[in-house]
Amino acid sequence: MARARGGLYDLVMTEVERPLLEAVMGHVDDNQTRAAELLGLSRGTLHKKLKQHGLLEL
Image (cartoon, rainbow, N blue to C red; front, side, top):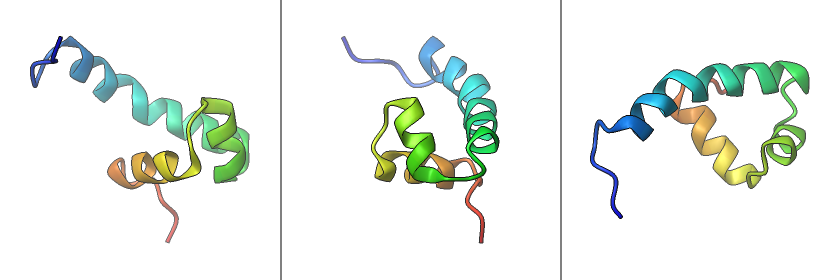
C-alpha cells in the first residue's frame, strides 16, 4: 500500500527523525559509521538523512 504525502508516517518522521539523529550523533561523538551501525542504516543512508535535516558538519 502506498503512503499518501502528508500522512501519519510523514508526520511522525518529521517530528521524530531529526531529534533521534541529533541524539545518536551526540552519543557517538559525531562518528557517522558508529551512528549508522546503531541505527541499522548504511553510512550513505545516514549521510543523506543528516544532509536532509541540516545536521552535517561543514
